[in-house]
Image 1 (cartoon, rainbow, N blue to C red):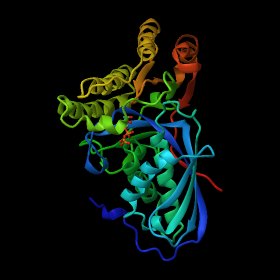
Image 2: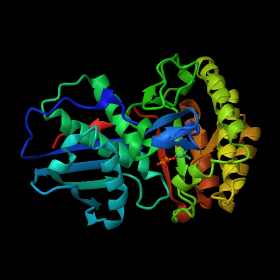
Image 3: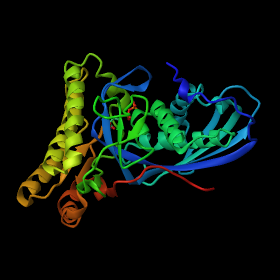
Image 4: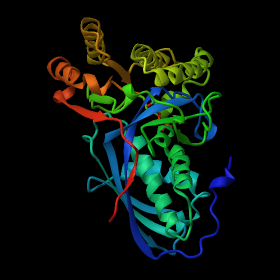
Length: 360
Ligand code: DP6
């Protein structure tokens, strides 16, 4: 599958060397992407909040070379990472048709995260989107004139080929990925900015990430997605995601936080129930994940505050709440939930506007 829109005109000339840099955020899905078809096409549409503080900063230094094939090395926080190479090589193979300069340069890729290393926070979304953005920026400097809209579209398209959820990290604060009948412009190929009215209740929405377990995941997202093939509940699940997107359009317009909580928590638990009912089955939640969920529910009933949770493919809990309730809820998190985190670690984040180019 080749999408001609993203194949560039022949480059007029190649720069000998240079560098580009981008910072790109992580995102948290409200309606989850879980299950995909060939070429990183999602099995259902998803929608996410772009985060502001959890980011990857990537610099790429490039230098013309004469040898054939790809040539690059990767550093994380200054330390060379041989284990990142296969994933990046596969990414380069997938995107070379769209960025034909890739084999003309040696790249030194230097990357760092604002969140603690191995925190269990998905760094693939921020990492792959930062990498894609650097490469599109480099292409732009090879005499390719583009509009900002096309630049973001191509970056999202390429990021998706690195990691599906990464295509939702280019812009913010609300991004849709995957074709949905009632969302104009939605596409399986790229993430788009949510095109409809959003109630002020969602302005500066907060996400405190509780780092329950920082260990390596026993099952990678890629394997998990694969297990949706032949899963007994997959068709119902994919249909449910469409229905939940419809319900969310209404909620985003009216600002109905009770309905929002219902959709978001149901999505999180459905994601994990898909894992628990696949073959082989697995559980990524930990006892402390459940402890936190139960405490959130009790606190919500007691106070009437609009606090809720969502989960990624891991044990960490994202605690979501509106800005006007932030003081009381942050106090509750510190006094009652942080004790269930590994080394008491948590990250306070809010909605963000997406990636930013870094001048170097
Ligand atoms: C549970 O984007 O990490 O976070 O496309 O295989 O790289 P790959 O998967 P990935 O899957 C993320 C799944 C999720 C839900 C979501 O972000 O929508």
